[in-house]
Image 1 (cartoon, one colour):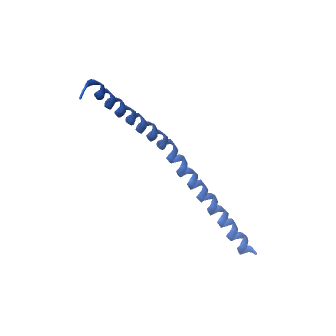
Image 2 (tube, helix red, strand yellow):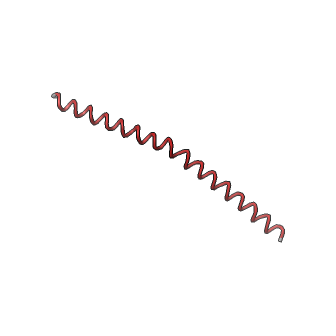
Image 3 (cartoon, helix red, strand yellow):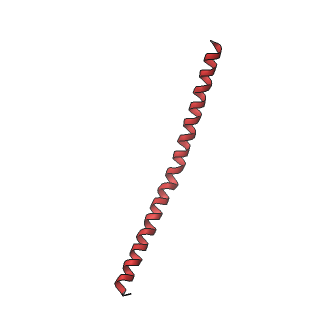
Length: 59
């Protein structure tokens, strides 16, 4: 293997590593926000269901 192909392989490896870091950082930030939004939506839905049950029970 000559010098140029070794550098190309090293460059491709560095790009894959950089891409992995960027995707990992994005996922690290995005995943907790998505989970919090889902939990917030579930709590809102539970409150609505509870108020609907109270309204129908008092009628």
